Length: 200
Image 1 (cartoon, rainbow, N blue to C red):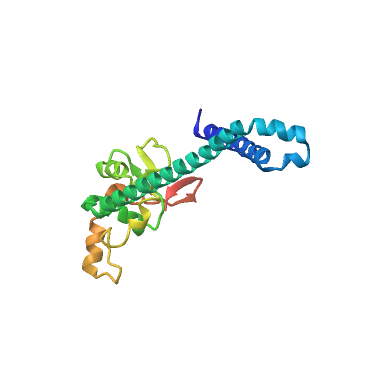
Image 2: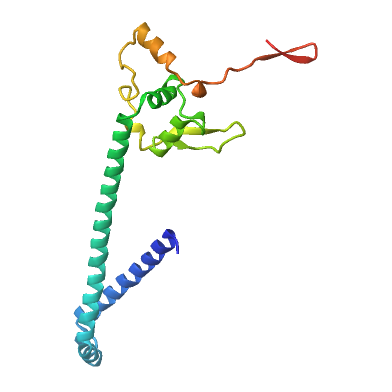
């Protein structure tokens, strides 16, 4: 049974329990003696069982509430730990990893095609900073984006770019550090000449 089926079954069970609780409360607290003395006598004879049923029904809702609270606290803790881990990983990126992440900024693209064979690419995948979004092609490259969880921590400072105006020396250093495998491939323009295509 998958998660959706479990949630659906739990929802149906809760609906049934709600109606049972309403029915139990009605049997216990409606003044049946005003409607029928015989019916009121029968209900009085079963009051002990009805009280036990009501206790069970209320206990079920309290237990589910506690489980949901504990689950929510656990999920929040896991999310915070994951965010803290990603923040630390981004802050501790090495020279080659920062240079690769800078390519997203320099090329102004949300997706880059990168070779899966590159150790830097594999390292960023394992650290959950890069996320693969397209399958590998014949050249060994695949589409990658910065993972959603890591984006808040990819700042100019984290990737070694000054938020202010860069000097010529800084620009030259950044350009010299660009990884060749991440640079955009040059586009070859063709023009039609004498019935055949030739490079312009």
